Image (cartoon, rainbow, N blue to C red; front, top):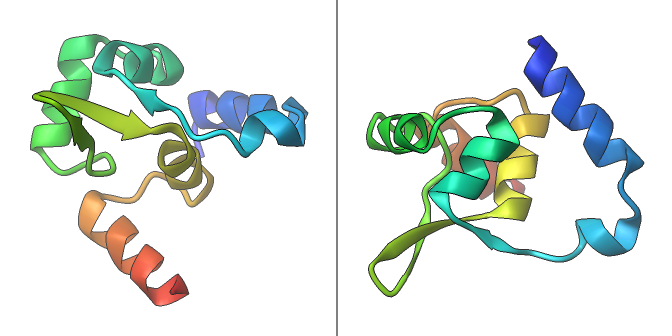
Length: 90
């Protein structure tokens, strides 16, 4: 786990449960701010299958905040591995 992941997990632990249960659809810009990346890098990671699959709102890709937080908590695996892990939990 790198320093950025440790920081994000620390912030998650400090959040009240009421905030954790809300599921927001985040833009690439918001995801970039969350991960300390540029908007362009978020799209590159998405194209490479390195971050969770976004949903579509109209023509715009949006990432579910809860899915990103879960992805961070399990150690940021690639998309295939992450989706397999989610299927195994069902």
